[in-house]
Image (cartoon, rainbow, N blue to C red; front, side, top):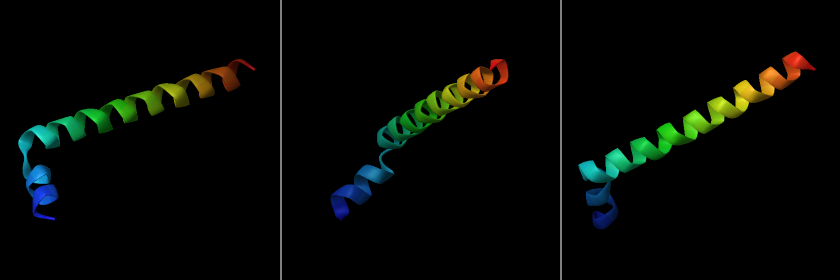
Length: 42
């Protein structure tokens, strides 16, 4: 528990988590836009 808690408080870990979350949101957003664009054309 202490190891995970310290890792969670580590700024580097927070930055990596933020980048991963941002990348996931960006990919999901692009997929949604592509799906909406395809449905709009069809």
